Length: 160
Image: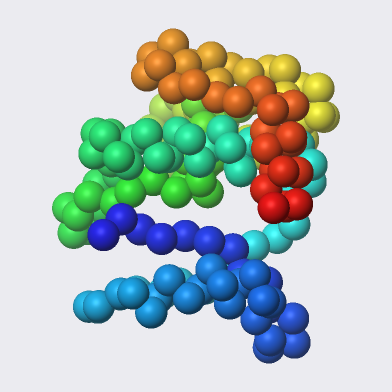
C-alpha cells in the first residue's frame, strides 16, 4: 500500500470533522503501520501552490516511478520523497550560496542551501519556483497546473 498523507486540524484536542473523514481511511487497513504526527506551520499564499501542487507532483512522480528514491545511509532502506525533504533538496540546488568549508582542509568553499524566506514573492515565484518547474517539465515531462488553475481547482474542491 502506498503512503497515505493528509492534514489534520486539531483544536484543543478535538479533531475537525474534515479530519475525521480523512482519518477514517484507517478503518480499511490491516497490518503494522507507523503514524507520525508533526506540527505544520502556516504557509503563506506563495507556498500553497508550491507545496500543495508543485512539490506534490514531483514527489508523486519520483515515488511512483521508484527511481531516484532516497537511500537511508544507516540502513540502506529506500525512502520515498516528501515535500519537506524535496524542498530542502531544492534549496541546495536552486537557492544556494558558497560558504567556507570549516570542517575540511584548505581554503575550499562548499555550496549550502539558503532559506527561501529571504526571497520576496517575485523572486520566489519568478526565479526559484519557475526554475524548478522548468527543470522537472523538461527532464521528466511532468505537467504542472498554472498557479491560477490551481487556485481555481482548490476553490472548486472547497465548495464541493
